[in-house]
Amino acid sequence: MAFPLSTLTHISAIRRVLLLAVVILTAFGNVHGRHKVQKWETVQYPAISCRAHTASLTDFGGIGDGTTLNTDAFRTAVDHLSQFQSDGGSMLYVPAGKWLTGSFNLTSHFTLYLDKDAVLLASQDENDYPVIAPLPSYGRGRDTEGGRFISLVFGSNLTDVVITGENGTIDGQGQLWWDKFHNGELKLTRPYLIEIMYSDNIQISSLTLINSPSWNVHPVYCSNIIIQGITILAPVRSPNTDGINPDSCINTRIEDCYIVSGDDCIAVKSGWDEYGVAFGMPTKQLAIRRITCISPTSATIALGSEMSGGIQDVRAEDIVAVNTESAVRIKTAVGRGGYVKDIYVRGVTMKTMKYVFWMTGDYGSHPDNNYDPNALPVIENINYRDMVAENVTIAAKLAGISGDPFTGICISNVTIEMAPKAKKLFWNCTDISGISSKVVPQPCDLLPDQGTEYASPCNFPTESLPIDDMEIQTCSCRKKIYS
Image (cartoon, rainbow, N blue to C red; front, side, top):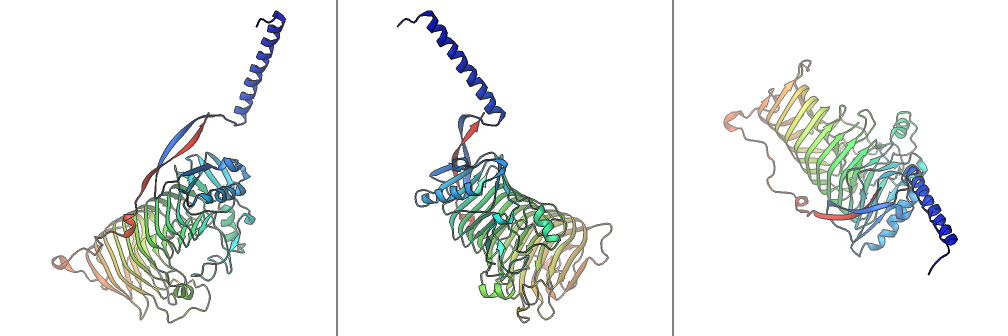
């Protein structure tokens, strides 16, 4: 069909106007960060389970501008994805951005996946954290009596849960909470960053956790747990910012983690005084491998002090501690009851330490005055071997309980280089018994040297733990790449 010249001129003008509008809108969108999708990228990651269904937080109204509250988006997303529990499971993908949020709960057969440029920003408004009951094995909150604020990322009575990503970040924005703690203004116990309760088959991996209000990772009453490739960073004077605290958990593996903390880098727990005794759930079958710790006022690995349900069969190896108060510390007290036994540690490298070995039988700190003064802890079969330390102030402070000595302590093949201003008494030992061999400087008389003729390394089990048989798959997800 032929058009008159005037009509063609009019059509050409319309086209120029439309093209100009597209250019303007594209420029406007780029200025305001509204990028169009260029392509999809497939990302592979290791996990205990792969998922059949994937959704992005933006599908549920999430806005990653650092100021918009996304609590409802997270909760709606998890609620929607929970319908796929029996249909191959689901993943919630958190893309690049700063996602301010209050607490949200996870679901079973579920993966929370953080992009490498994703940051979960914890809300500093107490109203964004529902109040939940104290742990039954504790009887009260750790900061105050009564309940506690729920953790930022929380789950209970779940199975098959993965929290992972491309080393994305969860930022607890803890300064406000630390100030309240120091000023005595806390009305309830502070929230943790991640807490999973009464659950089975858990993986927490490939994340960076910073500035937690209190503890960072707290699996409690759980089994079959892998915690791997986590970086945890907190100011070294921040209160109670423990790194990873397995608590009344069975069959756990913690490995390849880097932790800078204001408290213990790893604290193994199982309940507090009469509440922990009554609950009666130990932590056992725990492997800790390839951990680096910096904590000037606390331990690399603490056993206790809340150990009233028992701690047994802990195996720690290939550990690095720098500018840290102690390597492996056992903390307990009269009234705790319970036990710490069958502990095996080897391959520890330390630099600038206050203590290498530290055991405390008078730690105190009770939930109330109703503990049983006749409930004495049993500490036995504690094995340390193949360790080297430099710039150490005190080689060991080993203090058991009068009438309840810590027994079966074995220390072998350990070299400790004392600091120029080290204490004159390198070893301070009371109410303990055990043996030593090839240890420098020479241990206290309660740990007699076996001599080269009879010396043998302290025990370390050769058989693997069940958690080492948990299979890891290579999974994949598709994410949008923006221009």
